[in-house]
Image (cartoon, rainbow, N blue to C red; front, side, top):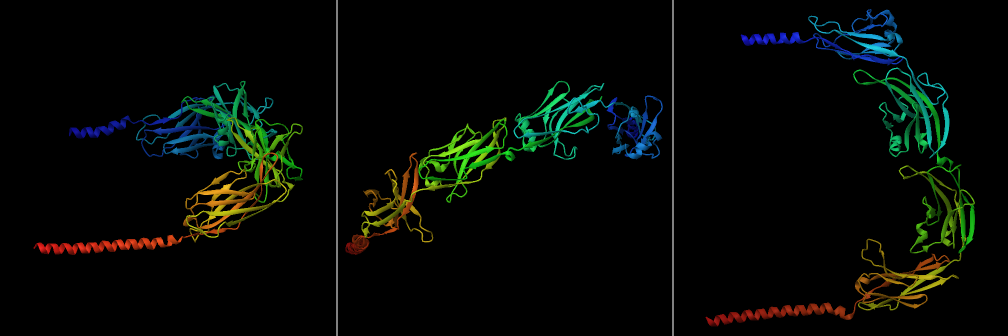
Length: 613
C-alpha cells in the first residue's frame, strides 16, 4: 500500500511543478521606419491542445497603461480600429511557425508603431499557473542611411531615380567605380557595402543582381560567388578600397567583355539585438554606372599587302601585315604576328614564321628542319610604320608559291603572369606567283645478271637522267617489296640510300645479308646484295630526288622519281636440289644397316644360348 501511495503522488507532484511560460525576444529592438519587423513568440509547459492561440497588444509611450489590441489567432474581431485597415491589407499579420509558436509581423513600420508589444496566450490549463504573456520594447528610428555614386546627390529613397553614368572601356583597361555610404544613426550600427552588376537593360532585383565584391559588417572582404569574380579576387585582379570614412572604391584591374552591365552599390545597416544576433535594419542601392566593354577582337583589323606578287626563283620576297583598330597602347596586352601559306599539298595552311609574344621569330616546321635546312626568313615590326610587320623570304623557292595570310593573336597578361588569348584575326589571303625552271627527273633500274643463284651477289643498277640548267644534287635509295602475305598489299622496305651529300646508309635486308653501294658514274649507282637467299625474293626499285641549294644555304626538293620494279628471284643450285635426296638416302641406309645388325646380333645370341644348354 505504501508503494501505491508513492505512485499516485508522483504525477500530482509533477503537475504542480509545470507552469506555462511565454517567451519573446529580449528588448529593446531597434528597427528603421519603413522596414519590416518579425517578433517571435512561443509558449511552453502548457496543458491542453497542441494548437495554442496568441493575442498581440501594443502599449504606446504616450499611454503606457492603455493596451491596444492588434491581432489574434482566435478572435477575428479582436483588432482595434487603429490597426483594422493594416490587418485587413496584410501589412500586419501573424505567421504560425508551429502549434505553440508564431511570428508577429509588420511589413512597413511607422513611427506610431513604437512601444511595448505584449504576446498573450489564452488559458488552456486546468487552472491558472505560470506566465501567460511576455513583453518586448520596440524602438522605431528614422532612416538615416545614405548611398550615392557621388557626394553631391545622396540617396534618400530605396533606389536613386537619377540617370546613371555611361562608361565605355576598352578590354584590359582598369575600371574604378566609387560609392559613398554613410549613416547618422544615434545607435551603434555597422555598415556593409556591396558592389553588384546586372545585365544591361535588366530589371534590378535580387534575382538579376550579381554580387561582385562586398565589405561585410565585420569588415571582412568577400568576392561574389561567381567564378567570374572569385577567381579574379584570388589573382588580385579585383579589390575594394575604403578611402576616408564614407567612400568605397571597387577596382577591376583588367576588365573583360563579360563585365559589361549596370553596376550598383548596395549599403546595408546592421544592429546587434540584446540576444547577440545581428539584424539588417535597412538597405539601399544606388546605380553607379552603365559600363560597356569594347572587346579587342571587335576593334582589331588585319590587312595584308600587296594583294598579289610575282617573283623569280632565288629572289627576295617581301610581304607586309598592317595591324590596326587599337587606338592607344593597352596595358598588359601582347601581340603575336605570324604568316601562313596554303598550297595544294597543304590546303589548310602551314606556318611560315611567327613573331611570338616574347619577341622571338619562330619558323614553321617546313622552313627549319634537317632535310631542307634553315631558311633565311625574317619577320620584324617596322619602326617607321606603326602597326606594320614585314615578312622577308630570301632566295624564294618554288615551294613558296601559294596564298599567304597574316594571323594576329592578342593576349592579355593576367596578374598571375599567365597569358590569356582574347582575340585572333586573319587577313584576306594574298597570292604569290613564282617563276622557276622545270626539273625533269627519271630513274631506270635493272639487274646486272638476269639469273642470280642463292649464295651469289645480286647487282641492281640505278641509272638517272635529269634535265635542268640548275646545279642539282641527287639522292638515291633502294626499296624492296616482299610478298609475305597474299591478302595484304606489299609494303616498301628501305634497303640502302645515298643522300645528296654522298653519305651512304644501309638498312637490314630480309635475309640479314650484307649490302654495299658502288657509284659507277655521276648518274649511275649499283646496289650489291651479298649472299642472296630465298628470303630476299621480291620486287626492287630505286627512288631518286633532285635537290637544289639556294644562296641562303637552304635546300629545295626540286623533283622526285622512281624506277619500275625489278623482280629478284634467287635460283637454287644443282647441288642444292640433290642435297635433300642425298641426305634422305644416307639416312635411310643408316637406318636399314642398324636394323640388319640388330637382327643378326639377336639371332646369334639365341644360338649361343642353345649351345650352352
